[in-house]
Image (tube, helix red, strand yellow):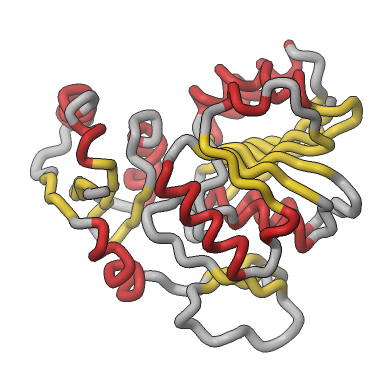
Length: 275
């Protein structure tokens, strides 16, 4: 699968974060920020359906100089090896690529080769979800990682005691990458990757659900999450900006769920609710 790299000039990290949130509503599935540039990646065949809207969004924001470049899939690993740095989540979780050395100490060690999948821990939302999972006892519980990307959150959940998770993602590349990563981390027997959208979880039942996606998908699919969540179960949601908290919590409360906790990091947010 070939990808298109969209490079956008940005003034600061805050602008890059906001643009990332907006572009995540389209089929862009990976983002990196390099000094004064935001780079967003989208499957080549999906760009035609949204390019006009994306260009209009950039024009509306007064952004000029954005450019599209085709990237062959086989070059992606080399790109990541040159840019990927280990992520330390509060000294408790260490997320690294296979070519990085193991961490010293007793931090949870997770090996991720991201390829084109979102979820390496670098983004504030993955960091928020990871840190929250580190505080939860999931012993013996069954869960769902919705929009699983690399599978990193599902892996953390298993290492926190979960018996089994379904890892659902709509992207074939993410599904393949998730399978590789759960095998690398020795948890393949506890995680079932599922290629599909939220309709794939109909009729299933979970003790907890992880959904690090984006505002619009969370609002649209939250009734499906609530329907599959056990009474007393926990739903963790991120992929949202701080300004989205009100809409997310209102939707959760309308579905009969109670807000337990919110966390913030660099303008992004995580909301934890309980059924």
